[in-house]
Image 1 (cartoon, protein in one colour):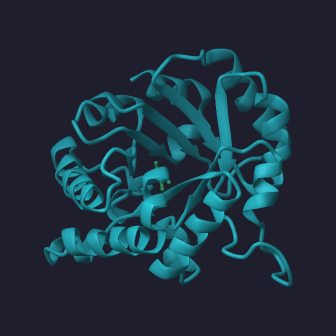
Image 2: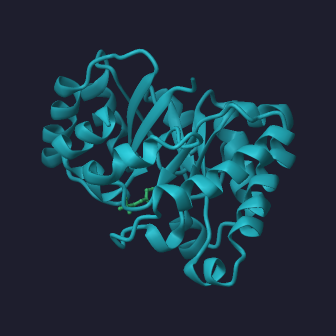
Length: 244
Ligand code: 13P
């Protein structure tokens, strides 16, 4: 049995006072359970706050992006080593919002995953198709291209990452993939990863996950947990998803 991993992606939301309430709710409400990990990926300025509030609790934390570079003249960027210094365990890379709004390519996403690994972080690499691509019947080929870019660049290290399948049409839309739709893609991702020697890594589903649909999604054989946006901003709802 693979571990269950539930990760909150706060995106560009939060503020010191609201974060304190949310992080304290999670720290108090989540208890270490074998085979289950709960984590939050916060905006970079709040990594120190996440560390202060969550250290000693069973909740892990991480960043939403890292630079592909180690250090240097890259104004505005945050290195993986900086993120790791704040006790973070995870870094999301290649979220569709970064691919679409910041022009991140498959090669750049793979370089970011490599930078995260080099700093001791576990990258959560996101893949997924647009609605147009799905309707054209291109879901499998788009996702295969994104997965292959990661496994080709990482080699044996691909077995140390987490993949999140996030159909872009399901993000923030309230329109979730059905468990069967998600499982079909997760199964094809698993097969692709297996060929690269990374068949046992966690594959998370993301896209309008909430307390009401989490259990049905997580019951699918190749869905190992969730990457949760909006619903991770509500402590009780996120804890319920964690226990689903
Ligand atoms: P929502 O859960 O708000 O749809 O966001 C999903 C997502 O993009 C998580 O990374």
